[in-house]
Image (tube, rainbow, N blue to C red):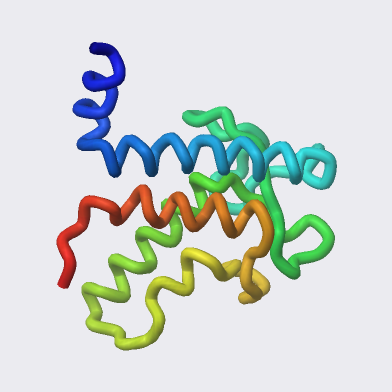
Length: 131
């Protein structure tokens, strides 16, 4: 059946669910931020519309002016890299704070953006072995 094939392709039921929840949360976040982000570009990839995912921009932190606009997928990739770097260097600090903290203003993301980043984190690490 088609659903079973999709689940298998995603890497299992838990990964499939995480992917679905992430996609929905990103759409909600981008829609909620659409009015505020008009005419802006992502501070990470410098594009208005993400080249691969076609998602819109978000910003729900303490940044003001033209700072802090980003795609959830860019924020997620940045967080993933920073966590991997912290693990590689054996840093004991809260390496996962990058999943919910703005790299510019250093304030926590909130609302639908924080929710989308939570699903991005879960999607990224759902299959990771426990240590």
